[in-house]
Picture 1: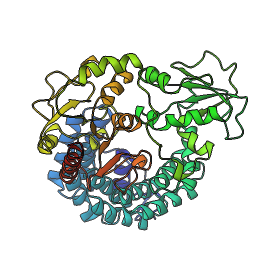
Picture 2: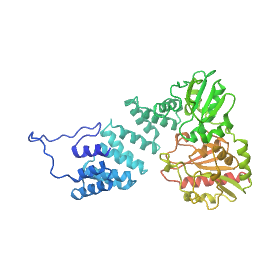
Picture 3: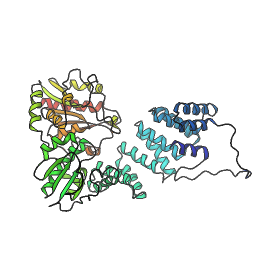
Picture 4: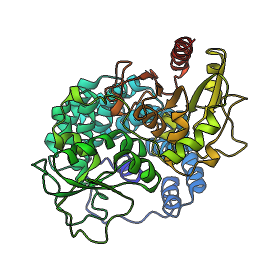
Length: 485
């Protein structure tokens, strides 16, 4: 991206969809001679090609001493700052570039994308709308504009741009998938599910079942169908309740699940018609079709008003229940489980993870609370929200243990992670602390969840704006404690 941008700024090449600037006619046709000395920009680009980032930065900064408004140097430094997480510095560089290049779509697009990273969505929209106006066919600019509008909660406008992108690139699985995500976020299931199916054309969806046809929603009676979990553990828990519906229609089901969920799902769903497996079969013999788990509501034709579970549908294995009940039940007072972080390797995990100190005010929500950590993978010296809390997670071996702990609690407070789904699927009341870029499964508005009874959703208004979320959660905790006294 940086090389292409530099070439446009240095050589006058137009951005995609924009008219190329006119070039002066050369006075003669004599062949160009190689320069005797390399410019600082050339040295910087050579350093980048060799991975010498600091050398590149020095060369670009030296270029600015000769020309403080050098567009190529500021753009190059902006991209280096972006890579290193210095978003404000990168924005400042691109703002300087706009002095000489106020209408360059590539600059406006990059500046807009930086404002998105900074959580300044209105500023992003201003720049990206100009970029799209100057270069209507510039796909990255329109993609970023849709993303900025989405984050600014202007969903219908974002959807309009996503539809333009799909219309111009009708074979793009990524664009159809994003449109599906947008429509599902708006609650437009009839339109959203078919678009969301385009994810199946992306790499990775043939694991262990290559050659098996997709089940198309036709009568499954008498067929053996492999149901494959996908995406995160929370998705597996949320959509697992549709597996029995497939068996109820006469199918034999091979349910392929992650090892950590195998014991819990076997206790919850295994039957004469449903077999829970942790590994794909060595071949597809005996199987008639496959279906990915998140496709089941669409393929089964589940209407929106039937999406919400009637009650608990996960069952904790008896041995796990008894073992953990003996540990958790003796704890005094109103027992509240809490999870404040997601998986650090997940993309954009930082937007849903809450620093423990931000949650400390929850300790004052009501007297008589015993806090129980449901946060997996913590080091013994890692910070926690409360100075006094019970932490059994070091002894957990799989999700059956986590579910057994949750079952022994009175309430669960969680960020958008699998813990929230597990607690809701076990029928526990849940307070969900949702980020500003909330997952489509929780939708953009309303305190109630479209999937689970007993879940209260409190959403951040902007990136990292957890203050009001914590206040609302405190009030909800106090209400829950008062209801049992």
